[in-house]
Length: 124
Image (cartoon, rainbow, N blue to C red):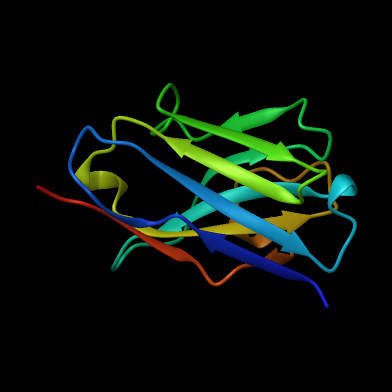
């Protein structure tokens, strides 16, 4: 049975960093694209970043470009999101998601499998 499990969230101060992890099981990870999404209270879920199955292509939302870095280790069945220079606007529940489709962008409805999320709170 497929499973995506996020970890690494927490409470940090503005300007600090966090690394989120997504552990993948139950399907052939090396043929699936993986993405990170986030949802803040009262807001719609938004795409943050995506990485292709091979890891050679990445995509970022404008709001996180230059601050966040997505990576994957297929051998360890892990995907990571390194988040630097965090601001209160980054506060949200962060989700990882997977899809077989290479044409998927950062729209949530293009992604098939979802984790339960991890809370990230940026506050002084």
